[in-house]
Length: 479
Image (tube, rainbow, N blue to C red; front, side):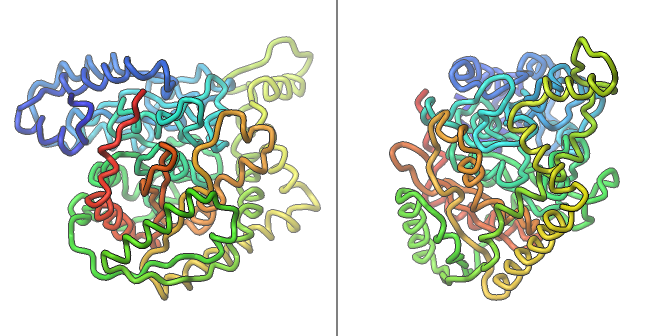
């Protein structure tokens, strides 16, 4: 069963000529057919097209991802394919060009097997806000897979693709990775080009990778990282060979545990699993140190001023004039704008646009947006002070296990608090990874490792070390 193998194992099998690319794609396509109806991870499956491409790849070449399948969150442009952002307003929008990350994946030989479901415009923590259908958690179909990259996490968890791309604005890779029992990395802001990623909050969005094995995640991150002249926020920083670096021996690391994170309301199962995880790290010779991040208690209010403000500005382009959905039956252009946006956007997106527009409006800009940016700076400085004492910061990824459908949709604040442990990382622009650290009540628990700016290497090394011990990738949900 090739679908059970890691990306790296598949790469070696293809390289040695033991299997063909066609056999690999057929195996994952078969898995997709057996699981997709229950999980509903994809908005646009592209397995048929991938299979056609695979049939032409009979001769191996030395491309890094030659013939390997990858799924893509449906807010990243793939030329000639629909990019809906799980919104009615973009339901029939076909991407006119490839995002930079897609260009790089294709150049490396990867085959795109589908566009995955998400919360509309990446706004949500459960994938319940998709305009089309909710994605289900493969470990318990009555529970959410997390969000906003719920489809990308679920497809890797259920193994209808070995790796996938997601985007992370406030935890949208790490939180679903935690809920679905897979690895999810958000790199340093500026590490991966955002060109061709449909913008939600431009100063926070970052593309990252889901996988079951650290080596797979490291390899794909290597391919998509690096400077891009088309993205003014992209930084010209050398890209390490993470797929090799992760196997090097770790010197004794100091791991910081932020005391403020444990003042939040954590579920006992999550707290217990994290305590066990830290004990295991101590056995490996890591030094554990309590640290303080005094301003993180303001992270959620800060985030929910900055992100909606940027969303309100970014989403102004969906007006029914240039592209996307346009309402029918209007008397003038103003009515056309308002009807189009009212019918085209879902409830959560409209809520955030209104929040953001209010925060940016005359008389409130200084009181809200400007103040939030100042607090954001203080949160960043908290992390920098902590990194003078420790090499990496650890915490649970989420305060709870995956919750049931409908449990938090009636209370938006409760939904927002799902990201209380991940949002500070985006505000500070740091790299962070979620790794599976336990299963409680047959539901995965994720641990979050936060690195210094541009130091994805250390958190990937700790992930790799943990993986050798815990072997979380051996667990496959029984659908």
